[in-house]
Each structure stands twice: as C-alpha cells, then as structure tokens.
Image (cartoon, rainbow, N blue to C red):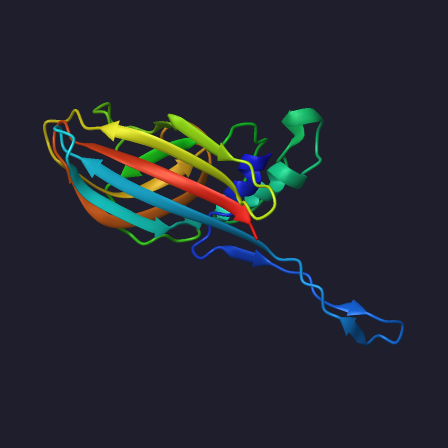
Length: 215
C-alpha cells in the first residue's frame, strides 16, 4: 500500500493537501489548523560508457498521467468484488480511463527515444525500445525503502540499469513506469522526457524513480 500511495505522488511539482478552518458555534473561524502532506516524485538518469565513465546525467520531476491517477485511486478505494481481485474494478471512460482489476505493482521501468512532451492522456511511451538489445522494459532491479518517522519522510526508490547490446546507436529521451512487462499492454503510471542520451554498443543507462511522502 505504501508503494501505491507513493506512486500517487509522482507529479510535476509535488502535490500539497491541506485542511483548514475550525469554526466556533457562531460559524466564525476560531482558529486555523492546517494539516499538510507533501508528496513528490523525481527521476534521475545516469549513463556510462563501456569503461564505466559517466557520459551523461539528467534529473527532473516527473508527471503522473490520467490513467495512473485513476488507477491509483481505484487501487486504494474501490470496493467492487472481494479481496485483492476486487480492487480497481470500476470502469472509466474517455482517454486514459483505467479499466480492469489492478493486482500488479507499478515497478516496471521502460525507456524510449521519443521527445514529445508529456501529456496527461498518454498511456504508452512515444517510441519504446522494445527489441531484445538490452534496452527493453523490465522490473526494477533495486527497490529501497525509507520508513518515515517524525521529521523523516517516507521514501521509495526504484532503479534499473539498461546496457545496450545493439550495433546501432539509440538516443534515449523518455522513461515510463508501468505495471506490466508486456510492451504496449497494461497501465502506465507516469512518463517523463529529458535531454537525449546517445548510447552506443556497450553503454549503459540507469533510470531511478524516487517517490517521497512527507511534510
């Protein structure tokens, strides 16, 4: 559940939620209590050549698409059906509508070469590197948790390294987070683009998604 709540946080500038206004018997605000929760997402890109030297570094906030927002809320709050199979079974309509029961985690990282800016209606990468040359999507190889207590924020870091085994160069400029390893299927939670990183045979690129929940 922590991962799902954290996933909701992958917004461009973070999302602040507040509750204010404590009224007295006359309807006048007697005091102002504010409970604020800040949830943020970030993506880091590091590339190295075959010898291990860093050749590129990128970092930026990332953005949850409509499909991801709808799926997360349904995963958390939908009550149709029973047990895990019942989560998220409400059906949405329109672009990015989340459909079907949701039982998989959004821990599959993909990369691609398209530079089109992120749009809330996107459900796929623009041009995913889906062939078997070391650049195809896959489950995050590292998942690091930080459990928040007091002033410490709760944090989840997902990371995967892709190593090119292709005879031709690929300029990686986008990444997405999915809940399936099947290309062109199932839901995309978030997508972000960045300045292209040219990879030659033997070069590697590490994509790291960080989700932080805290005050």
